[in-house]
Length: 533
Image (tube, rainbow, N blue to C red; front, side):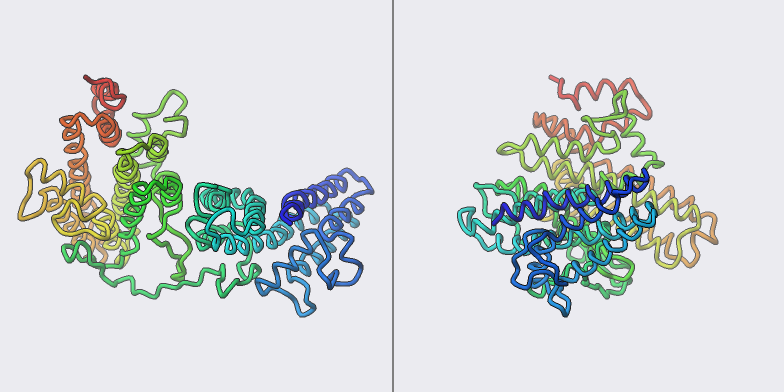
């Protein structure tokens, strides 16, 4: 029953580790009880019902993690020839080595057994159990169905959630939200695959071999999806308006996340929107071997990528302008201002205001990250670090983030990223040129100029003028990127939309702090803090 699973996975997991760590401390203190304490930890792992035969009870009568491992190994195909779970065989060997090291007063060696081997193997049965019951729970239509499976999924999910949390917060929160008892929603709302993915993206950081988890119903946690696309495969954006030189469809797909987030919010699924914001769904990332290893997400553009922007002028301007005396904004580190504002908007969601969340992600998170892409290209050129198509690819990435997937040329309603925003504002301010806003025409022309500068062989390494010309082009791009923000702020001021006035002020007004602090303070008070009449 679920209460036994709770004892196996939550109580005894911690009790085992407590005994092993205590044994190491006793070893260091010269206490001769170290071996005894270590073996007590082993006893808590195996239990007495298993008996003395190798592999334990053949009738499955055990009740501790050792027994759970045998149950889940049958399902995941990770049994040894003897019928015992492979993880049990590994752990028994590891724990024997640890006992011997304690007896030899090699305390550091015993500690290494815990940190580098036991912690990699002991959670495996709990992870397998979580995935098994997540799949079972996903087949339930409500929380009144499959009550045993639902309770077991919840308990096992809670047991691994702190472990996952230590390396991947978003994956841990995904597991928690999907397996939590919510009587108002279908169990595992987004499907068991979401739970499988959350675990998959965490295994490498936990140093757990995906092969040790095994496979369930032909589903493996070894992420073997390989993309063999030639990096020079062009990507067609905006029904042929812009064709890149290199493959950037994976970047353009971030637009589909924004659409999915809007769809989730409009259908009343705030929790799903939050998961999509934090974890992403459509913009895959790949390792150097072309194996999918995760997703880009709007949250990561702020929470992770800003760590790489600490020397860049625009992030520093925004951080300086927004931070309080403790270096924070909205009670978090000021460099995370975009994520903080998005989360604030999530908390303010009410009928008619769902679109604000997605707008914030676009004009705060992605806007600064796109600028980072351009700065990084310029810095690499300056340092002569651009080879082959590196520079062209960087510009193609920036274009993908500007236009995005699903964009129709000249259409502000059929698109999701900056191009669509510029089209909407172009219509309102009557600055269209041949069916497109002048802003988009100018920016795409400048992107092409930048690509041309970088397309010549050894452009940055052999021609000292390339950097100077590229810098001028990028500065022009940055200035034009602010135009839709200025237009939006003016428009919403005229519409008396105070919420959007505040939002777009956050995206724009901090820029003024660098050149006119007094004017910035005035506009911050009036617009960002919504005190204007």
